[in-house]
Image: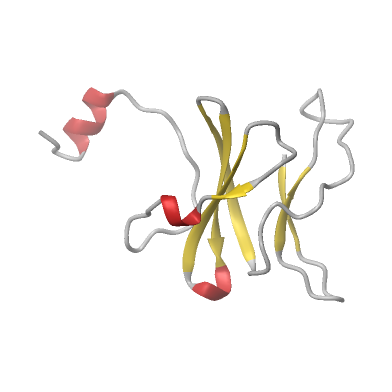
Length: 108
């Protein structure tokens, strides 16, 4: 599970993860921050091949970022390797068939 730390004192606004073998119970304590010294919020998580990717809003920098991990323990900031559409807001990721995407977005 990805979660957002919003500790007021000292101020924190970072992302962390917790683990469980069950969806509804048994979660570990939150990890150390997986994001940097900037304020981060609105995480969305997906797995691409061997890497877990967490996309998020770099709130005070007015841009989006990403971190990745192959073991959910060691995280690498890959913000400079990704791009996001203008006007993007917090959201989630889901799979669609290529044909549907091409029809809806008139891609040829």
